[in-house]
Length: 147
Image (cartoon, rainbow, N blue to C red; front, side, top):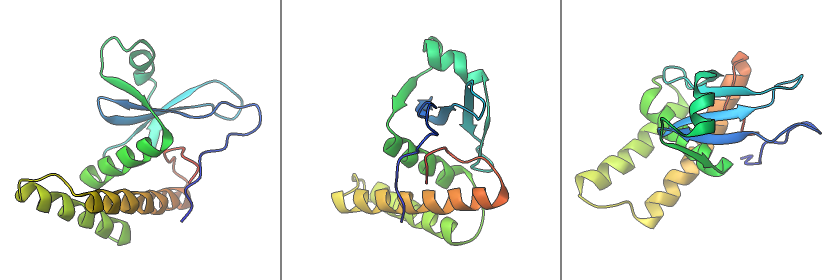
C-alpha cells in the first residue's frame, strides 16, 4: 500500500486540506499557476472545482472550518465516501466492514476500542488508495493526496 504525501512539481505549492463543516475541501495549484478549490462530490466521491468555498475558508466568517494534515484529511474523505457514495465491489465491501464495526460499538453503547480504531484507520487508508486509483482510471479528479 502506498501512503505518501502529495509531491507538487518544483516551485508549486503544497495542497492545503480543509474540513468545511466536516466536508473535505482542498486548495491546489493547477498547472499554469493560480488556485483551485476542490470539494468532494457526495454522489460520486470525486472532487470537483467549487470556488464558492474559497471565501468562507479564507475568512472563516460563516462556517466551521479547520485546516487539517493530509492523514486526517484522508480519514475524513473516506468517512464521507463510506457514508454517501453507493456502489458495488471491493472498496464498498470495505466501507460496509467499517460501518459494521462502528454500528456494533454504537449498539453496545460504547466507544470504539483501540483495536477497532486502528482497524478502521487502516481500512480507510486502503479504501482511499483503491478509490483514488479508480478515479484516475476514469480520468476524474481525486483528493490530491498523492496516493
